Length: 280
Image (cartoon, rainbow, N blue to C red; front, top):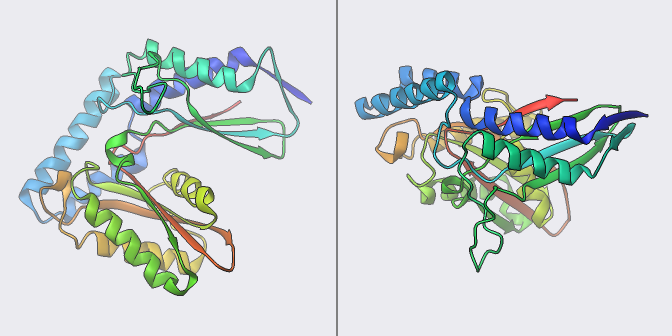
């Protein structure tokens, strides 16, 4: 049994909150750079250049890439041979978010009640997902999610008769209706299967997969390729001002489901698809 002190978790989460908000992941940055070469619209190319310029400033000056520093979504993989010492794991994660958003001068965007709308003042509580895995390590991924793109996400409870074509049509419809609102170019995470909440979680996790990495399932790989091509034919373009670069990537994750259903969730992310991780 390996012990990990809660203070180490607080420090790690705090650092990840700041890093994720200030440093655009290399895979996303490089995808925007490639898009500059293939984008046919002069306005689109100019906007893509502005996005990388903005990312450069954020990285060099260690300031947020976007003013919406998101709701903190935290994925925690806990080795079954780990013992958390000194307090509760959930409390440690939330304290890390609280500390990181204060020390990083990140916008606090969480309200304590969906109807009463009073700000919690420290961007907590975080949305935390736990997985128990083998080993004696603790892996933490912090993925701040802004709501310009989150609000454009959807879930469909399709019938099995809809098939893969029906699923693809629902995904394209979601992106088309989102238009400029998610601050494209987007990264589109898709979750298929499980039940209502499983599909949504799969779609969120799909956003963590590196741009350029296809699904290992051949039929999903082909689906990803087709969806990316169809989305980029919509003409929405960078920041919704027209062009071929509406999406940088599409990732599809799947899970077994019930014989009577086919849940499909679409979680749209803006070009600032932020996440940072550490293993303790």
